[in-house]
Structure formats: C-alpha cells, structure tokens
Length: 175
Length: 129
Figure 1: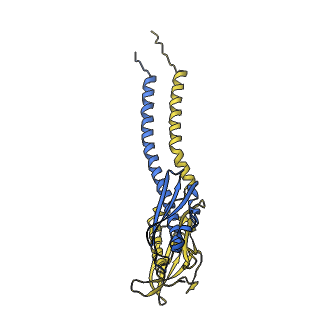
Figure 2: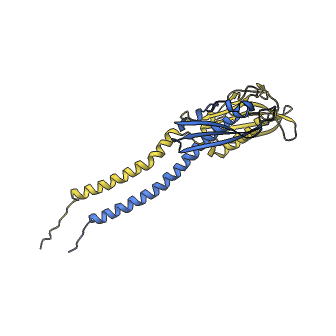
Figure 3: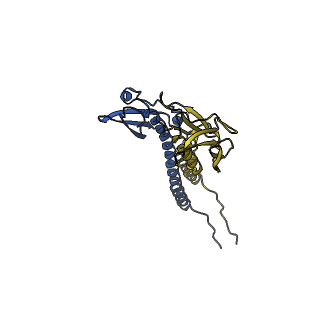
C-alpha cells in the first residue's frame, strides 16, 4: 500500500501573520530605544560616575578654595610651569601654614598632586585609571567678579567634543 | 503509519506572543534604566552650570542684585545637550538685609528643571556671603 504524504509549506496568510508580528516587535524595539539613541548622540559621557574623577575634583576643590592669598597661582615652581594641564597653587594647611600644591594632568589616565612645604615634598598623591577622555581636561583662569581673585575653571570634553565637566573653583580664604 | 505534523498557526501565534511579551518587558526595564541614567547625566550638567552661576552671583554687590540680568551671566556651553533650555534668576528680599537668589534651568519644554538657591546677606563689606 502506498502512503500519500502531504508536505505543504506555510500558506500566504500564515506568512503574513508571522511577518506582521515580527514587524510589531521591530516597531516596539525602535520606539523604545529612540530616546536611548537620542541621549547617546547628544549627552556627554558622565565622568562623575568615576570615583577617581570625584576624588580628584574634591581634592582640587579644597586646594583652590583654601588658597592662601588673592593671587595664589604661581607661574613656575621647580621643574613645573603652569599651563592648561598644570596648576600651581599656594594653599593653606590645616595647621595654618602654607604649602605649594602642583596638580599635574599631563599624563593621560593619570593625575598627580604633589605638595611642597618650604621646597620639600610633603605629600605625593597619584591616581590612575581615570577615563581616557578626562585627559582632555583644561585648566583656565576666570574672573567671577570685578573685585574677586582669579578663579580656576576646570573643563573636560569627551571624545566627541562635548563638555562633560565645567567647574569654577573660587578661592575663599581671603574673601 | 506515523503521522508527523508541524506547528499549527495558533501554536505559532501563541509562541510569538509570548516571545513579544518577554522581549517587551525586558526591553522596557532596560530602557527605563537608561532613561534614569540619562536624567542623572542631564541633572549633573545642570547643577554644574548652577554652581558656576552661583559663583558669579555671590560676587555681585548686594544692592545691585535685583538689577542684574535675569538670565545666567556665566558660560552655559555645558548645557548645549539640553537645548532648547532657558535660564532664570529671580531675586527676592526675604527680610531686611537678606536676599534669596533663585537660579533655575528649565529644559525639555519645561518638563525638567533644576534649581539652586543662594542666600545673600548684606554684610556691608565682602560680597561673598
């Protein structure tokens, strides 16, 4: 006896249904990820998520806010020359004395803070593992008021040139 | 005789529906997480701009606070990703010798905003506090 075997594929209607559902899934995916793609395109990298960045900014803030005079920034100190990657600032210590602090951002992925007390290294702090984009950091001087001392402005851009950090630090001690 | 049949349309549809449901739920959770991260990033940008503006407003003379620009005087380039946005500064004398400087940034057509208040006291000398 011969068995008749029917080997049929999907009908057109079945295919249409399947494709309609697939299309629905694609639409849902597209709609739900639209906002995400927009944010990725427009927003800079959030460098403040990195604990090292927070630590650097916190220490730097304290040094500048506790600056020792109205003009606390030195142009040169030892082998260091101030630039958009190097900040030299005279700051107050907890004991009431002064020290010269050098912030060195020249090495990508690394920040060094070196404090000198009467020419002798009193503290040497290095942090590594910073975001690569953080190396685009720039130090600038701004005036926030006609009678105020120069403030330090820290800006850092991500790889797409979007500003991720823009912080003005104004010396407080002599105000 | 052994009868071998494939999946019926109903079975296929049910399978697709379950798959869609699972994908939608997991994707919604993922997108919600990203939305919150995006909001956090926006807020960080806004508060940096607010803190910078506060540095300028601290140093304006106490008497002239009301006559200063009602928009931010500091550089707001960091707010570029939030465009269109607007900045507002409102000054109110809460008691004699004390003024409240309220700085606000609004974006996403006013749906989102960040505020920072600065209390200024007439010290007679320094403009700092």
